Image (cartoon, rainbow, N blue to C red; front, side, top):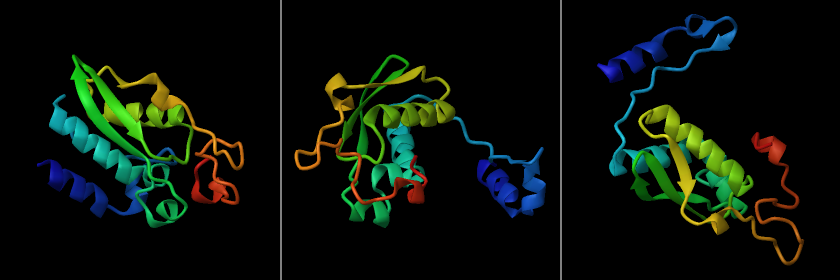
Length: 145
């Protein structure tokens, strides 16, 4: 079963999970392209890419509130809505989400944004910086650059 395969992979010593010096990833269960599966994968992306979305306490504490929601399936293309604040430029967030979805749902051919204006990084009137640039926060410390 998929869960026992995943569990047996994790149970192996780390030395057995390495090939050619690179850590191998567990085999992911490929999902069928449905609205439910897409939303589940988007939710998984928010957890796995937590600092980008603010789904961890450190990010949320500095106002990172990013969210990605399914709008519709347009044939084999997923259309999403971005809302809130992200660590990264929104175009980069879309790229990372697309890679995440395509890896898990191979039937999907792409991820697009509902409205191109959602890719615009709003400027903070006080600093003139994009709102995804948080003054005084070292994004490198969070592994975000």
